[in-house]
Image (cartoon, rainbow, N blue to C red; front, side):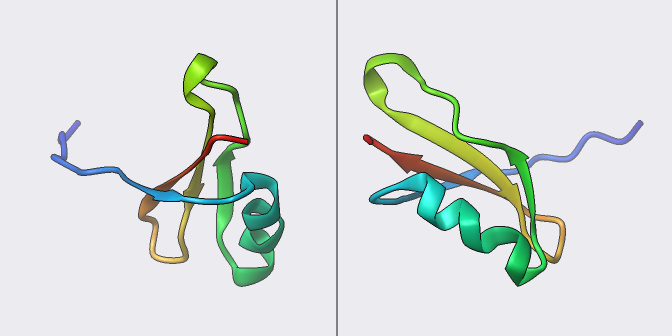
Length: 60
């Protein structure tokens, strides 16, 4: 198995669920929906149409 070095970029969002509602319509895939990350807020992971993983972050 070949290991890749990658960077995961997180984009800030007012409300993650609003962004996730647009993901599949744009041809992308939700990898991990909105779990809480304690006192730090919430995050989600999506895969874009080219297979790149992208993170979303919000405090709500």
